[in-house]
Picture 1 (cartoon, rainbow, N blue to C red):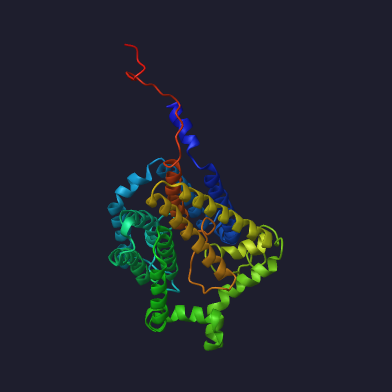
Picture 2 (cartoon, rainbow, N blue to C red):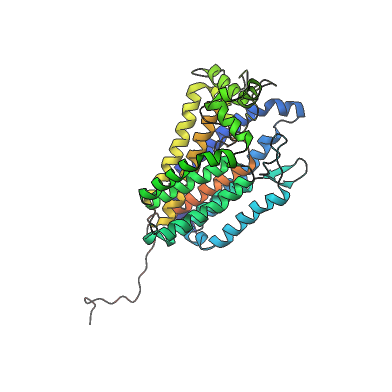
Length: 400
C-alpha cells in the first residue's frame, strides 16, 4: 500500500495541478471583487455566484483526482455511454431548458437545485468533455486511414451532432469552441491540408447564406457593432456595444498596475459592467490589477496549456495525445474569445474565461478535462521497479 501511494505521488503532474489551483484561486478573487456589492446587499459574506463557483471547483477537483487514477484507455472504452449521457442532457434542454430574460431563445441551462437558491447546469460544458473522449477514440480507430473521404465525412458528422444541437439552443460561443476543438484535433491527428482548404473555401462561399439564414438578428447586430457600426442606428449601436465599451473603459482605467484589489471604480459601481463576474471578468483583472495582472494571468494560462502539450507529446497512443491537444484547444480558444470580447476586438457572444469566470458548470467540467490529462500523464509515465522477485528462472548457466 505504501509503495502504491509513493507511485501515485510520483505519477501525478503536480506542476499542472498546482497551476490550475492557482488559476482557480485567481478566479475566486476576481469574482469576489465583481460580486461583493451583491453579497453586501444580500447580507451574505459571499455572493451566490462565488458560493456556486467554490463548491463546483471543489467537486471538480475531487473528481479530477479520481479520474486521474483511472486509465484513460479504460474510460474511452465506455465512449458510447459517455456520448449518450451528454447527448441526452443536451436534448433535455429542448424540454426543460431555461434562458435569461434578455435572450429567451438561449435555452442553455437546466435547473437542478431550487433551494436555497436555484442552481443551473449547462450541459454543453459536459459535452465538451464527452467530445474529448468520443472524438479522440474515433480518431484512434481510423488513424491509419483517416484521410479517406468516407472517414473524413464520418468524423465531420461526429462533430456536427453536438455543434448543431448547441447552435439550436442559441449558444453560439460554445458551438465555436467545439469548432476549434474539432479543427485542432483533426489537424494534430494528421488530416491533410487539402481538406482544410476545401472546408475554408466552402465556409467562405456560404458566408452570405450563414449571415442571412443562420445568424439571428441579435448576433448580426453584435458583429456589426464591432466591425461596421455605421450599419446600425445610434440607439441599437449603443445598446449592443454598451457592455464591451464599459469593459474597455475599465481596462483602460487600470493602467499598468491597476487601481487595486476591491478598488476599481467600474467594478465596484452599482452601474458597473454587466456580467463582469463571468463573460466580462477580464475587465475586473484589467481595472484592479492592471496590465501587469493581465499579463500574469495570460502567463499562467499559457503555462497550463504548455504543460498539457508536454503531456500530449509523451503519450504513447493517438487518443491520449488528442485528449490533451483537445483540452488545449478548448482552453486557448475560450481565453482568446473571452479576452477579445473584453478588449472590443471580437463580437460579444457569451463565453467564459477558463478557471477565472464564475459558473458552476464551467468550473466543474474544466477539472474533468484536467483529470483526463493527468490520467494520460500517469499512464504514459515510466514506472520504477520498487521490488522485483523472480522465481524458477532457468538459464544456460544454471548448474547441472
